[in-house]
Image (cartoon, rainbow, N blue to C red; front, side, top):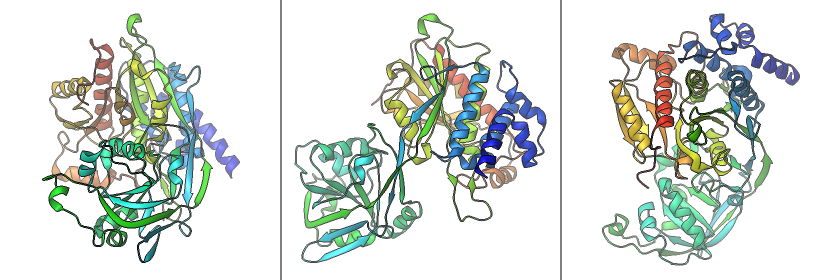
Length: 515
């Protein structure tokens, strides 16, 4: 069976029409002929978008989970398309970059949290607390006295004040979120043994538990990412642990709200977290190609187009469909990027354009974080990043959000191009939820254009029909459909190409305007 699948995958890489015939899909053969024809287009073609998304979201790729044969097949397919288009390899003569992925599987029976004062209470993972995970050092047990640092806001105001946390466990009410890049390194510098993050609300806790997994993927190499790859061991705990830890602890509500100074509170209890499990390697690959710039003086500067090649893979036990195909997330982004690579060759911009396809996005931006740590070209020569990962709109959006657009002139450039088309947009602050983040965190102007669901010429009734039919984020129903209207994806790609071309021709280059 595995041998047959490998053979089928290889044939499908060479001929998407063969795959269409095998799956019984009644789509025009011309759609797939175009994807393999050695043409140099001057405009984005919906036939190419259909072909790329068809193969990448097909069942034969088994959902493209990072580290699986489906993800490897996707990487090979993307490399084949870059070669066909004549793009140069991004990684010193190679189109693929090996990414040292690994995972840690928590043993729920042997992983415990113990809270002790005059009495001792033992909690087990999976019900009362969960491991956050991170870099390899985050999977070590820890113990120490508990100290309450309040909520993320009070912890932020109290950081870098020199108070030692040596031998202590940080207790925080809530999750650090966007404050993690400041808080986690501060806790490590001050000697914290670990962190206990409390979620007292039962509804929020149940939602958190529903999304947990006892498998934690990470980059098994040094990367500077305190959000997704913290080196400090941390656990998140629910209402039962909250009540046990905080019972009788004096808390000044006014200080938590910032109305008066907050002082860390020694809780007077100790905690021990015992973590048991197994490590395993699951290597992955990023893929990249370069379209050289047309201006000799600026050819060594780059604008990057990014998308992720992975999705969620197979979830055993689901019926009748256990494959998460990921048509909109992110076969659509990869397809737009490949179509842009073809279209831009009709007149290459001044700067070079770097097309990057990352693994492990769904596991915590793993491939993009590794690439940003070990880049193909120095980051100071990357003048802009445009990320494509906002789904596949089934109609043309007239309203956009430019994530990350508030902190660089790349955002204002994108804003002007959106409005020039008669559309509207908002510039929003960056968030660590997509592959543009590792670049922006390292000072590279980076944006994530997101089409909102306000569509041109679509009635409310038709809008509901389109959403019911095609809106299936992180669901097995997010599949390729022959009747999917590609006009929205076409206009998304067209706008992205315009932003990329403008950034690659801009003088001066885009730059960061806010921290």
